[in-house]
Image 1: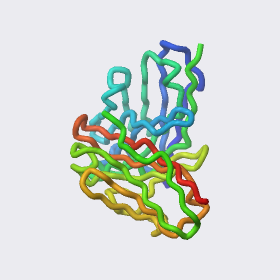
Image 2: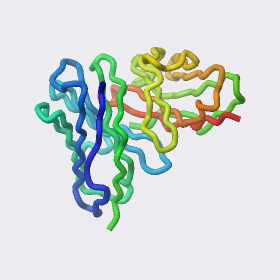
Image 3: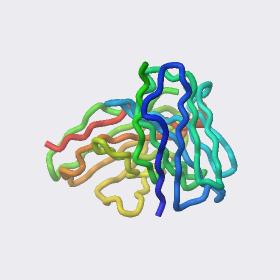
Length: 121
Length: 111
């Protein structure tokens, strides 16, 4: 079965760079059409789409955060890494990674449990 | 891009039907059949309930249905049950940035 799990620091200081890793099983990012995305949710607030990467290394970013985000994949390790630069307290949120089955049907069908990242000095 | 617009809250009694709207533009909801809906219980990860406007994943109750008219998509929950009390989010592809966007979220309360 498909599982995803996010990992990374729980606390980062303002201006630092956040690096989150999504480790998955049950599928391969070398399979045609497959993708992995990142979504975040500040405490008590709505979901926000951040970025996604497809099997062919096609990358998409939220326009409002594009300058701060980088998404990469390591197919051999079954991992997707998201980096976000210049962290600010408003970036405090639970960060989720999720699976996309196909580029022609881009919905998130499996989600990780999420990891809470707090930005504070 | 701007988030899709959803009502902040919707409520209903057990057994009733409720509908949650998701309003966008011709660049997202109105232009593509890539609307999906997610259910989120407190402290839990979101769960896919509807994809491609009206398709239900395996295992999702047929009490959940989706539709679209113009720039507005809708999620209907029929035969409302206590376990349906949760937050619901819509999502759509948007051509304005070749990316995706979520809705503002709707809290469903079962009275």
